[in-house]
Length: 281
Image 1 (cartoon, rainbow, N blue to C red):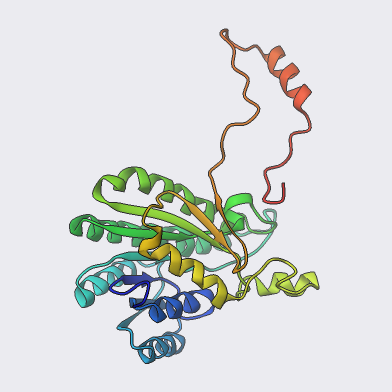
Image 2: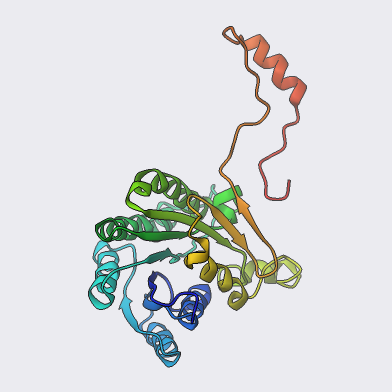
């Protein structure tokens, strides 16, 4: 038996790179899959690979920036498989520029695919999951969304937005037995390869795992073994795993009287320098 036997899973952006490995790894564990991408040839190819593994699969082409595509993804899963157990919001694009050079179009294009698309998919999936009484939504985030990254104001805003939507979904949907978690996959992908090449170091030296190894983390998170997880962010690079938490209070000062500006000046002067929030701290 596979770890995902009977699971009906939608994975956006699953025609290539890490999304493709997510889909193949889920298929190998027995899932029925709805795959998606904007390249028809690549999408057909991954659907054939999944079918060769013996798993039911249907392809829904198109960009998740379009409402009708997002609705079709969920509705195809329900129509073909009788319901939806897991939505993986994986689709993403980058348009890297520094803040000083980023155009309106650069910002809007990334937000449309990386944030609006997941919202549209979440909304339709949540409706279906609430109706059936269970479900699991998984947001694929990144370091940019957790701690920021040079040249990625748009991408960081979108990926941080996924975390905000995840935390909100846990509050709104838990009473319907619908969970929402996130995963930060630290993998060598089409997006991260330019960074690796520029560094002059190997992917392994920089902590990036191979996509087929990192996909095991998604399989685990989508499985019943992770059924106790809700509102969590899993990071995994194939050799290291951890949980990330949302920012929390630190350096707390509590008084019984209104704190004056002078007291604020004195308190934070004694704390300086406060470190920048970073995954490397």
